[in-house]
Amino acid sequence: MKYRVIGTDPARRREVSVLALGAMLFGSFTDERTAFALLDRYVEAGGTLIDTSDNYAYWHDGGQGGQSEELLGRWRRSRGVGDEVLIATKLGARPLAPGTGFLDNPEGLSAGTIREAADRSRERLGVERLDLLYAHIDDPTVPQEETVEAFGALVAEGTVGLLGVSNQAAWRVERARALAAAAGLPGYEVLQYQHSLLRPRFDVPSGLFPDGSLGHAGPDLIGYLRAVPGLTLVAYSPLLAGAYVREDKPLAPDYDHPGTPARLAVLRDIARETGATANQVVLAWQIGAELPIVPLAGASTTAQLEENLAAVDLELTADQRARLDAAH
Image (cartoon, rainbow, N blue to C red; front, side, top):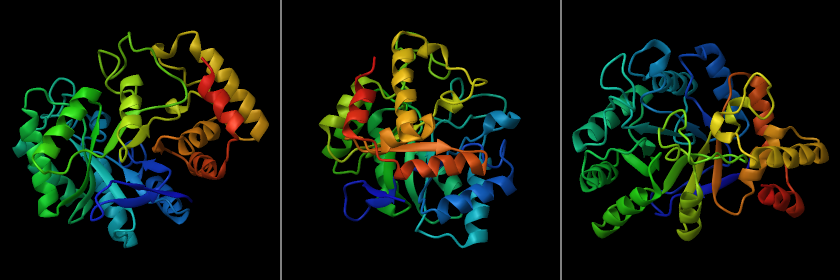
């Protein structure tokens, strides 16, 4: 395994593995025995960054989520896992009532909700401190000052370590960070967005976000990362739910444009050159990027996890990387 540092404050920054494990479906679609086996193997291989959320997976049973955090709590206790493994979670997108969703009825990012949700997550995970806590979605109904101050209070109390943000416009992230800096409070340092080798169109609706943009690390966000040292991008869905390698997993409509076949052709060429799978090339491309990117990949079988883990040791040449970057 290889490692990188996330965060900038010497008191709170952490060294984590360059490949994160997504636990979104653990305890719901992925049964406990399988999930435990995947978690055990990931940690055995040196993995130290596991990702979840307080609303995973509410769509499994029409509830409000929490299954993933609860399973991770049981796994931690049964294995005696401590601070050596960083578990990141998110709040703000938990449905307020069963049978609703995070788009139409989210808890949001008010000060009271942030505190209550963080306490619930700590209880489910069985931890005194949340190592990395994200604002899962934006909440334009709450003043950003209130949200920033609420997250900062949790860090000051020692119940939260690093702060992160997901699925918000880059200008909103920057505004929140500026407000935090002006108030002498910690700000968002880890940005979690969908990012992969293939690039979606931003002028068509996506599956989760009607404007087709907020969930993706588009040009604005990538430019922001280049301009602000110390930020880290955690790239969710880097393998596009299996679409690179499985014919039964078609690409979403927002990838239907001329650039997709061109990038896929280069990807397949480099997979043949390296003897690796297309998935492994994509992960290696992210891990070795100039920008600080941590791919966040889920797995439902040990074979999938082993494939992902092997990507850590795949070294792309400068020429191969340049060809992947340039294809359009």
